[in-house]
Image (cartoon, rainbow, N blue to C red; front, side, top):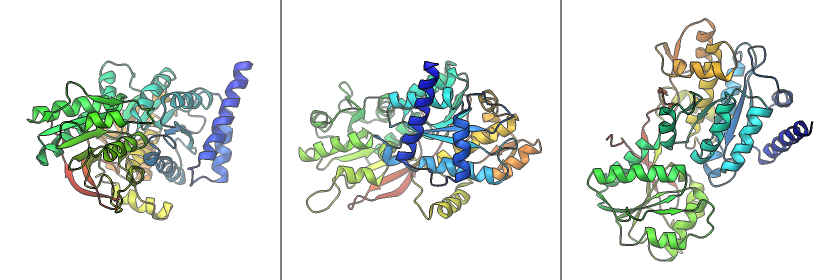
Length: 439
């Protein structure tokens, strides 16, 4: 009884916490009633009840500047499918949780989603460190996870070993490719001597290793290869790390950072006079104008990191134009930020897989993920058209907004990369596309 009361209390507390943080702009009274009912149910998912999805995103914490729009995209996907008949004849419910960009909080949140709310699948998380922690809980409970942005190569390696039993996929390509794309960008810019500084977690370290390998293979020199600079994700001052990263007059510093801590590091480098004349190379983890605002400006109003270049998984799917039109209509022209198309695709794929399976179980969804995303069926971009074909017993090959989302046996996709630049006023601009250096 005590454990049951604790679970119920946790469910109520986290639900109220979500409402405090806010994000479900598409919510309705009917939806909220459905969510409350499903949260009070501990029965296993089946075809006799509506599909219940979870969402695990960084609404607060170090990646909140990117995570804010992800729940909106997930909710929009659910609303769209519900408007054309739902899944397996019933409306879909999505229960959203804030992982706070923290593995501990993320583990608590997914435990609630899987063991209290009894969801069948989860969209998320974004931070690789959070997904790493959450996956063990999801796999244990036979819950399918699709991340729109956990890009660490660690997941590929673990999937190859069979550790996830197929309950893992992502709609953003792994950093195996993005690191190579960043190395290609450094080479294209003519940089010969580059230093690295990364956040010390699955995302940062794995990215660093791939970047160093790609850049040195192409003839470049990593100045601090023998003594890599890796900073504590909980750090509040990063003066010494900045000094080490910008030492020895590098042509560029490749920073694999998160926004809050990364801004501290770049501020420290500027205040020490170390960053003058050095190009900063950045990644998807800080692709946000909120990040440039956090870094700050010089006395004359110029962004401290003006001229910085970066890479980010791009979106070039056949459904992108349709999604863009719908997004602008439903959000009153809210900008489509990084990983929003990937979040939409992840949510849609989960619903299509459940419909294809004919049931709402995690096992059923897992078994149909690759079939609906990369099979030999009819290519289709519209979720409602895809649902109609599946209801008729036909096979589909969903073409997403982020890309063709051809999920492979390890849960990976291959994508394209945009090159972005920080303008003098701190705004961001996409200036090019670049392909990975495939080893």
